Image (cartoon, rainbow, N blue to C red; front, side, top):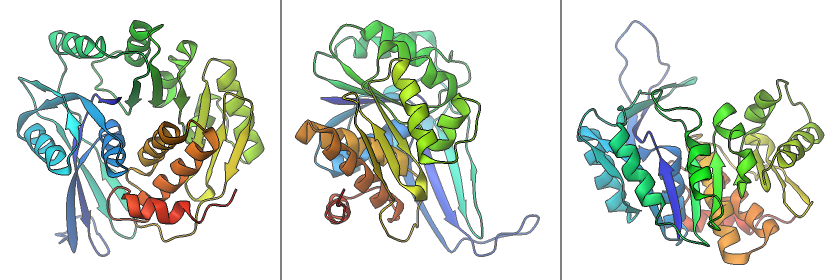
Amino acid sequence: MIYTVTFNPSLDYIASVEHFQTGVVNRTEKEVMFPGGKGINVSIVLNNLGIESRALGFLAGFTGTEIRRRLTELGCGEEMIFLKDGYSRINVKLRSDEESEINGMGPSIPDEALSELYGQLDHLKEGDILVLAGSIPSALPDTIYSDIMERLDGKGIRIAVDATKDLLVNVLSYHPFVIKPNNHELGEIFGRKLNTRKEIVECAKKLQEKGARNVLVSMAGDGAVLVDEDGRTYESPAPKGRVVNSVGAGDSMVAGFLAGYNMSGNYKEAFQMGIAAGSASAFSEGLAEKAKVEEILSQLSF
């Protein structure tokens, strides 16, 4: 079973406005709403690809109720903990001449709710996959992902981590199955701007030296790179298509990679599925659907 953890889920409200201007009334041309958060996105794409998963994390208030309703409507399994106070955040994505975002804070997570999550994680068993993805509320320590990995260490659980800066660096000593920084996040870790694929591969291998088993690096329109635990490096340009949505493409790549590996046990095929799923989301209004993923997958030739 694949489990995903989203500490700070959201309702993503995406509004399209022609030539947005500040200081005046703007009216939307189009608006859509999705359940959001990186782990939730991974679960949705896995479900679209026919791979069962369970979404774990925290919900609160009327927005939390709506996130749960929408996940159920999509057919995603979830065992999220409902908090007594606060409300799940709303993230506003504005599409106009430029794309802008306003992300909410989310609720506080009390110690008893965190203990309940730990209890859920204690039931994971050998062979399960756990995805730790996204930001955390400011009240939680930036060791929270490494604390979880320490708790599960030695149980034979493969853990994927999609996070930034210290949240990611802190887990490396626990040998995550796969980590997925993008090229900018990878550069931030090493305090430098990465200008070439050679530099990206070089830094990915340094993260392997620090403990990561597989390092998957997304590079938006420049494609992706995988450095696998067997010493092989795979590189791919981005598939051709019109980008209409930047939300969730990286999460979709994680889901595709895990789905591909789940089906084949082969890193090359996992990488190809990751690229196809990430691109399918980028080329769609919503998250990647199976038919679109398969269409793009058939075009990959490396």
